[in-house]
Length: 147
Image 1 (cartoon, helix red, strand yellow):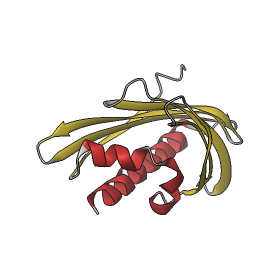
Image 2: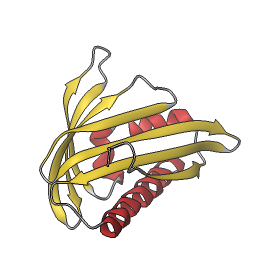
Image 3: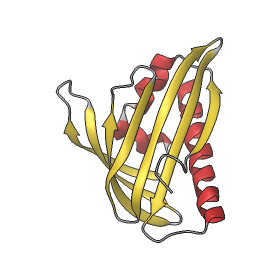
Image 4: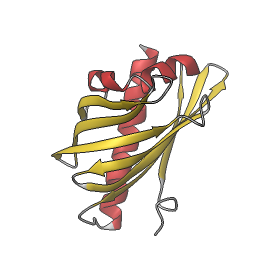
């Protein structure tokens, strides 16, 4: 199955402006302050505009500690930010995107993710893990953006 076909997605309405949402999403080093599973985030490379292009994370995933590095693609801004996995210890893919749309009363956030683990999981376990990650990510972003 190709990486693009097996995506899980979640959407939510946030009572905050897209600008506020992007401020949070793009401030990678502060993820540990609000994203429960992220223990550490370190910018490893920046693009010519000073934006973080590679970020290394230490996180807890599926009940264990994991390290992974994501590369970010800003070409879709201000509508969309996407990323893909550069390296990871328990994952061979961690691709995803945030898409933001200004609506009455705030911002509609669409979050999609595709995870491939080094040790394959049964489909239902993988879907459950993705669902938890998606729901938590949106919930935590919502809490942060609306605070």
